[in-house]
View 1 (spheres, helix red, strand yellow):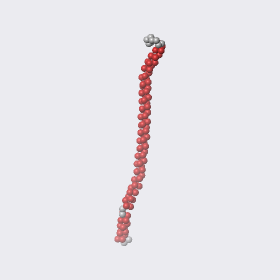
View 2 (cartoon, helix red, strand yellow):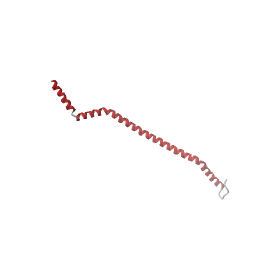
View 3 (cartoon, one colour):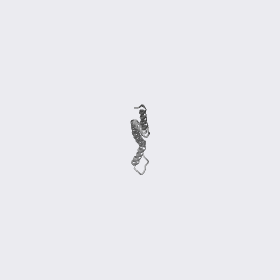
View 4 (cartoon, one colour):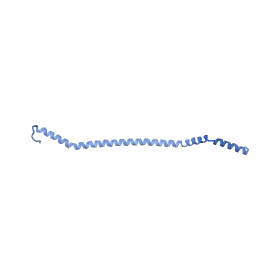
Length: 108
């Protein structure tokens, strides 16, 4: 019990007990706050990991799609390039004149 004062002893005892309760509960409250912060940080970490995995999955699907498109267009692009080169050159007229010359020399 507290020293004798003009205040009632029961009041001083209740205030002292409240102060002791605050001091006794503070480690538990501090640890609770720390665990709550740790749980929140872990949740954010997993949320960011899921977001990164989703973005990588989209990038992987895009790369696969582009690869398949390139595989399917290889022959088409090669044919288009060859046709363009032949059309730009005089190969067809040279071949036609060669065939005509051969026919003339053989008497066909």
